[in-house]
Length: 150
Image (cartoon, rainbow, N blue to C red; front, side, top):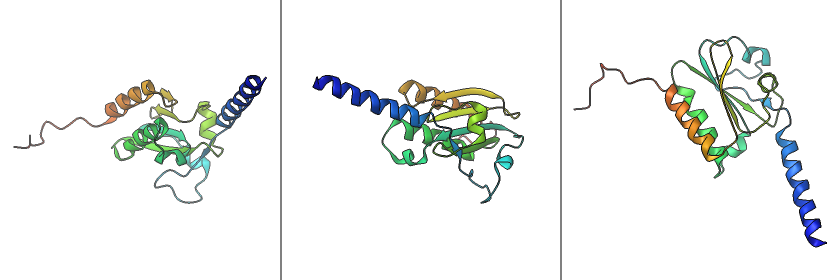
């Protein structure tokens, strides 16, 4: 009987976590955004490749796969030609609904028209490896004119 009660408690806890992660996420102002900027302003037509991160920012400092996903996604913030936007999954964001985000963390790479090109959901080792490759592909090629470091 005790095993049944424990199994029921574990199932209820697991269901609660899944329910919480399936709630509609919300936007945090992207870096450089003005305080009070409307959601409409953040959904304007993009002029470059965009990397959209949907995650709980509290997990950025944790020792888990989620922190690695957040770090990798944030790493493209300084790449020329890449627009990085971060959305807090604890709040409501029209972008999360638009892209059908149901898992945290989720990283979506879009083209200049906002069309989804690649999606990474979760924090498994395979997802992290694929995301790392996609982030590296967004980095600019070294210029042939740069000195070789002699």
